[in-house]
Length: 236
Image 1 (cartoon, rainbow, N blue to C red):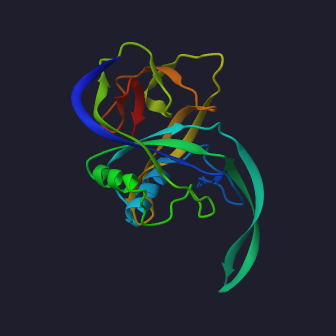
Image 2 (tube, rainbow, N blue to C red):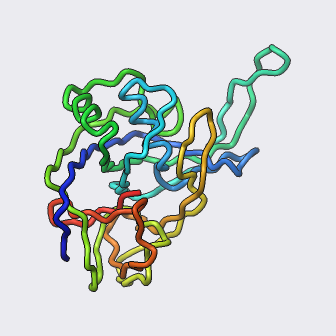
C-alpha cells in the first residue's frame, strides 16, 4: 500500500446503543431501516454535538460497522396528530439491535471543534441513532495526525469500513464473509430538509474486513481512501 505525502487529521469516535432506526424514506406503513447508520445521520449527530441545528458541511466521514447487523420488526404505538387532537397510531417499525459504529471524521470546517467537544465529553443537544428513542453517547476513540491519502494502488485493498460501490472494480471474496449491498442512502444535506444525490455501499454483515480491487477511474475528490494506522479507510 503506497501513501501520498499530503497529511491530514482524522477524528475517530464510537457510537452504540440498544436499538437504532435509520428510516428509509421510501417506506410508509411499515417503516424499514437502512442496515447501518447513514452518512446524513452521522453529520446530523455531529451537528447535535456542536449545537448546530441545520448542520451543513463538506467535511468527510467514514463508517465502520462494529457489531453484527441484526434487525427485528416491532409494532409500536406512535403518538400522532389528527386535526389538532392526539391519538395512538399502531406502526410496524424495523429496528436494528445492539448497533455499534466507529465513525471517522475528517475536514477543516468542523474537525477541530468536534475533537474539542469529544475530548470534553460534551454535546449541546441529545445524540441518538436515527430516532429520539435510540439515545447514544459518542465516545472519542482516537485522534490521528499525519493521516495520508492512499495512492498508486495496484493491489487488493482491505478495509473494515463500508465501501461505496462505485469505486469497486471487483471484490476479493472470502469464505467466512457475509457480503451485502445497501443502496439508496441520501448523500448530501443541503439545508432546510433537502438532500442531493444518493450513494450505495458494500458492507460485511459481521463487521469483518473486505478486500477489493479499486476502480481508480471512479475515485474522485469526493471519495477518499486514507491510511489510518496501517488500515485503509473509505471517506465520502
